[in-house]
Length: 632
Image (cartoon, rainbow, N blue to C red; front, side, top):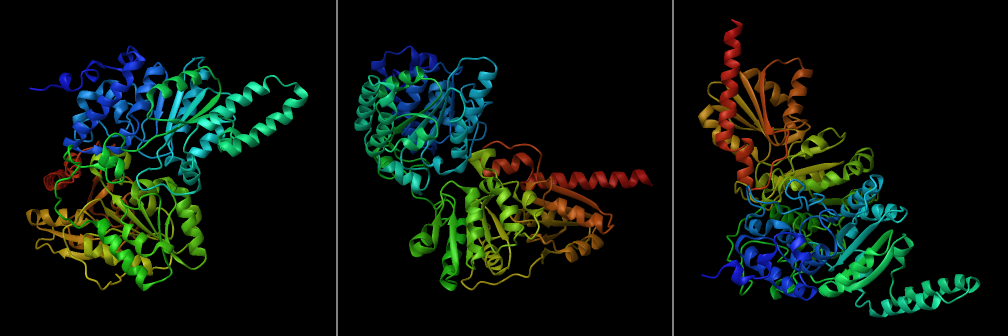
C-alpha cells in the first residue's frame, strides 16, 4: 500500500516552517513539486480553492524559508492562495477537511493557527493589516519583519491604495509582495491590471538599475541631482516601476515567482533593506497542473475531479437563483435599452456572463471595488439610465456609506440584485449574507424584497426595476423550491404579503421571509399554523400584520438574517408603535458567527431546519402557556 511517505517523502518531513528552514536550498524545488502534487491529490478528492494555491507554492516556501515565522508576520490577502501556506504550517494532514463542517477553514483564521496572522475573506486588506502590525511592533520595540502578500486582482480595490499611500509615508519596515498572475476570480479589469500585464521580464530593468546605482555612486553632488532625474526617466522607459517608488517604496521586480531560488535570494536581500519595500513577482495561476493553467477560472474553486484528466463528473443541472437573475437581466435589457449591468469583479458568480456577451457595451465590471460600484451606479442614475448592480450580500457591506450617502440621500433609481443572501456553506462566516436586512432596512428610501421562490424572484426583479428609487432583491445561493418562471414578467403590489396557508384554530401565525417560506409551509401542518409569505421587508404589509395579530394567539417571524435589527424586529417595532400587545417569537440567525459547513448544516446548527423550527415554536408556546397559567 502506497503511503504519503512514499508519495511525498520530502513533504512528509515538514512539520512546520522550522522544518523548511532546515532544508538545503537545493531541496526547495523538489519540495515545491511535492506540494503541488499533494494539492492535486487532496483537492481532486474533496474540492476547494485550487488554481490560486498552485500559483503560490514557490512563494510560500520562500517566505517561510527566509523569514522566522511566526515571529515574522506573513499577511495573505484572502485565503484562496494560502493552501500551500497551510500545508507548511502543520495542517497538511488536515487539508482533507478544508471547508467542511468541523474541518479547517478555506481562509486564514487566527484561531486556527499562530501562522495565520490575520483572517480575511474579503479582498484588498493585507497591506493595511500588515502596516498596522509593523507599526504596532515598532511601538513595542520589537524587531520583526512584516510581509503582505497581495494579488494584482486585489490591487483593483481602493483600500489597497489607501494602505500603500499610508505605508509609503511611514518610517516603518514593511514588505509588500505583489503576486501578479493577471487573475482574481473573474479576469482582472482596469488600467492597473493592464499596466501590470505588459510587464514580461525584469532583467533589463534590474541590470539598468544596478548599473545606474554603480555609476551614480561615483558622481559629485553637483551632478548627482541631474543624474538621479535622468535615472528616473530611464527606469520609466525600461520598466514602469516609478508608480510604486513615487509612493515611497523601494521597488524590486518583476521576479519569476516560480523560481524558488530567485525568490529566496531576492527576499534575503530585501531583509537587508529598511523601510517600505515592494517586491513584484509574476506567477501563473494553476501552475504545474495543465488543465488549471489552461483555464484558471474553471479551476479557481472546484468540486472533486479526476486528477489524471482534470475532468469533473457530470453535474445534475439545477436552476439557481443566479440563473434566474441572469436570464431576467438579458430579458429586461432587450426590453429597455437604458439598462446597464454592473458587477464588482464577480461576472461568473453573479450570473452576468450571458449579459456581458450579448450586451458588451452595457456591461461594466469595475473590479474589486464595491464602494466605487455603488457611486458609479449613482452617477449613471443621475443621467437617466437604469443601473442594475449585481453584488453579493457580504460584499455590499463594504459599500454601506455609499448606499446611504450617494444612493439613499439622493433617492436615485438603482436596483440592487443581492446574491448569496443568508448562509453560503463552505465559505463560512466571512461570506455569510446574514446582515443585509438589518443594515438596509434602517436606510431611508430603500425598497427591500425577499423572494420565496424562483418565479417570485423574477417578478420582484421586475418590480424593483420599475420602482422609482433605490430597490433591492435579496436571494440565496443555490436553488429554490423549483417554481418555474414564466417569460412574461408581472409587477407585484408594493408592500403586500400573501397568505400561503390559513389555520383552522387561529393559534399560530408564521410570518416568513424569503427562503424561510418553504420551511414554514413544511412545518405548518404540524402546528396548524397560518403561513404568510411577507415578500417585503420594507415597506412591511402593516394591514396583514394587524390582521394576523387580531386573529391568532401567537405570532412567529422567521428569517435567514440575524435576529438583531432584522425583519422580525421591524414587525416588533410596528406592533409596539400601534400599541398591539401579542405574544411573538422572532427566529433567525443568533448573535454569533456560524462556522463553515454545508448550508443545511448551518441551518441545523442555528435551528432553521424543520426540526429546529418546530422545537423553538413548541417551546415558545409551552412557555407562553405557562406564563398565562401562572398569572391566573
